[in-house]
Image (cartoon, rainbow, N blue to C red; front, side):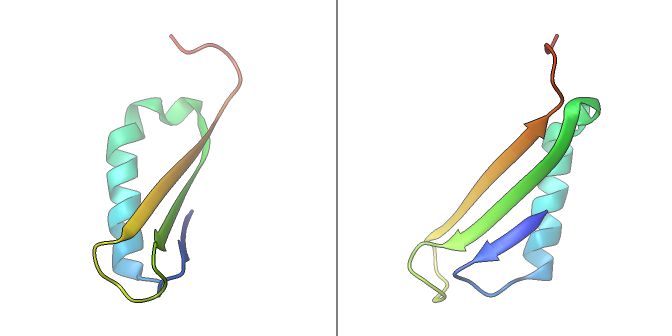
Length: 65
């Protein structure tokens, strides 16, 4: 799931975020339940370089090896 806060939603940016996360975490796919990406503008919906991205990953219980 990709969500946008304090900025206009962008399907292109959501696509890029999904691809980057999938590429980085693909090897853990069997252990991941869900991933949430939040993209927000630090100073409101003005654009610019003050974009912030956070990632929350829910994993299956058990030990990683």
